[in-house]
Length: 69
Image (cartoon, rainbow, N blue to C red; front, top):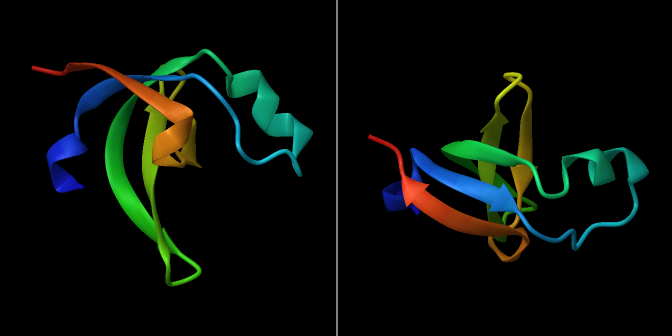
């Protein structure tokens, strides 16, 4: 998953619907800055948005747009 770091992404869908605050990030773009292991079974991406806020997203929830230079 480290090869995905520094790529520009777009949040395209939400698999988690227990927190409605997350819906404001739908269709936003950001940069993958790292990964995180949750529940000892899932590896998720840490995304930094243009306003410097950070969230974690599942691979199925994002679309890679390009690699940042």
